[in-house]
Length: 143
Image (cartoon, rainbow, N blue to C red):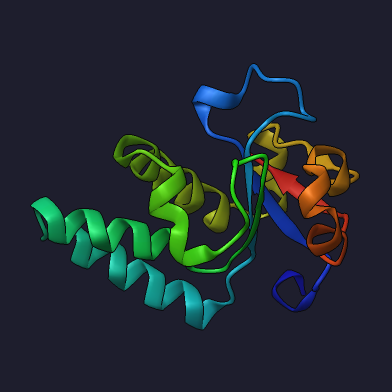
């Protein structure tokens, strides 16, 4: 059961950073959502669709914090509440779209999407963050 596996994480790289070498590539790591978490997340996405302006932006950043367990190469220490300090609004929108796709995809869908599995999260870790990341382990899905 992927939601119970503490070693299973989803690695998300935004479009702007795809071309960067992996050891310098900013990435965000998420834990897979269970059914109850997914229903709550989906309800929040529906609510976001009804919002505008500052309320919408705040809700998008908060939704993107759901199950966020780490980031690397982002220029600052990982604090989930600081997500709005590392992502531009359009990147926050991109992240929500990517998370929605990957969280709904089953193993066969992920193969069709050609989402590679990362074999070692520590390869992309900044030295200052290595200790905190080394506890977040290996088998991951990358989008």
